[in-house]
Image: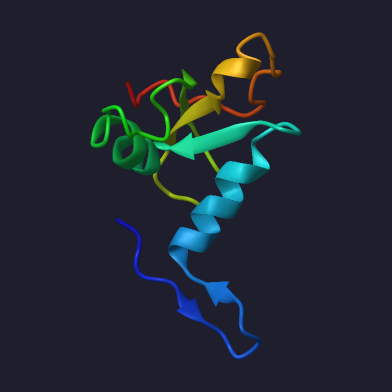
Length: 101
C-alpha cells in the first residue's frame, strides 16, 4: 500500500499514491476510466452489492502493465457505465509483464 500523500507548500498533493494515480491515468485514452487493482478491489470486490458504484458497470481486465517510475507492475481495469457498453478503446501501448500472472 502506498505511503500517505502530503500537501506541499503550493497546496497540491505529492506522494506515492498521487504518482500512481497519474501513471495509471496516463495510460487511459480520452474518456476512458482506468482503475488500479487496489482501487478495483475496494470499489468492486469489497462493495459488490446493490449500492456498489460499479454494480451495473462493464469492467474489463486489462492485465498487468509496467508504468513509468513504478517499480511493481500494476494490474489495470477499464470501467464503462452500462450506457456506454459498446464504446471501444485502443489497447494500452506498453510492455506487458509476462512473469506477473
